[in-house]
Length: 109
Image (cartoon, rainbow, N blue to C red):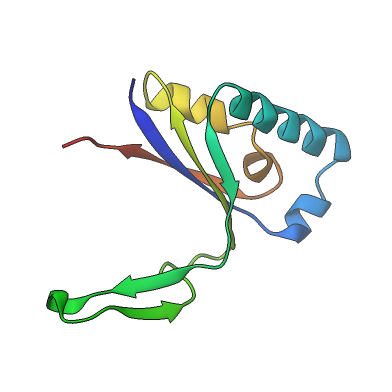
């Protein structure tokens, strides 16, 4: 089955202004996805890693990507196609609480 990487973006302010019942339903949806085997987690502090021409590892604290909203979390999901993947993430906290979720097909070489 095809795999998808999802990236959820959101901030506390958007979360807080979302009705509690909607937030609770979104968290219940996340719990159901996890019970189905979705690998899901909250984003921690990122580290950039470079190794130019294999000459030595260089690290920099902080994200490389920039976004108007902070990264909130990630998930790895299986779905029959992109439409099903979108449906699965459309009810997650970031999607319903004034954030956004990106869905990236994980292409296999």
